[in-house]
Image (cartoon, rainbow, N blue to C red; front, side, top):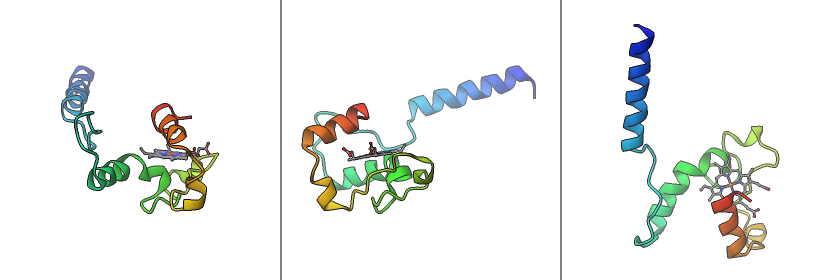
Length: 93
Ligand code: HEC
């Protein structure tokens, strides 16, 4: 296959993934949040680091420093204010 054909194929794949996003879409402002939607979004976007149980043992965890938070530790997690959690989710800090 020529290089040009490979580039055209790559461009087509990129276009397809742009039009039909792979993971669950994040809620828009008019949608009501539900536990089912939250679980879907968490499973897709958060489990690689935080693990399927939310215990911070996702498959990427071994490569990270600091380690992903353990969301099952209610005592530790409840120390964060809603504002702090929002900052973390939306800005990564
Ligand atoms: C690329 C890996 C990665 C992904 C993906 C990820 N996180 Fe994290 N998360 C981390 C790491 C690492 C920390 C610890 C950061 C620290 O201690 O400063 C963390 C910390 C947190 C914390 C604790 C914040 C705090 O104030 O201590 C929350 C809550 C959190 N993540 C939620 C999520 C949610 C919800 C998602 C999915 C939408 C997600 N994370 C996706 C790596 C990740």
